[in-house]
Length: 226
Image (cartoon, rainbow, N blue to C red):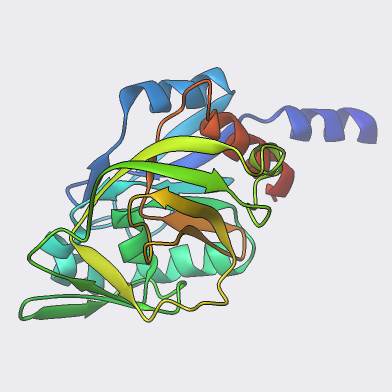
């Protein structure tokens, strides 16, 4: 019956694509385990060699060193295009640090520069000195796109950052999920750009009792799955 069909569709396991390759590999094992506990299957994909995204409901692009793979990332136009189409069509996505850089329009480092995904309307400039390094304290803003996190607006959460890059320009009108109380983030004041159903920032979150971000993201993916 139609009811049974709908029931089977709803019961389909949630799948979240995760970038796991030489460019992106910074993930906390405990956080990855939290996805399984939340009922989500992580499906790896390679931004350097895969030509297309797997069939997934959401995307997670974590930290890494995309500046070391500018040419290889730029050459893989089909992957960049697929990610851009996924996000611009409303697909839920989360990116941290290196993932944020990859989703910008380009990355420049020393004498290298190349086009990236282009969802975030800014360019990434990589410097030879740290821009943000160490412990962060973030205050959740009412602009946070994930309802479960937004319920805790004004709460302080711990995070950390380690990046030698900055976005140029940083638009003062961007909706952002966090106010930076300690650390640098995007500009010393804010972190976590919210555009389409994407949240992307420099902060590395930890899934802990004070900030069960994996549960909040999985709930958000459930809400927006196609």
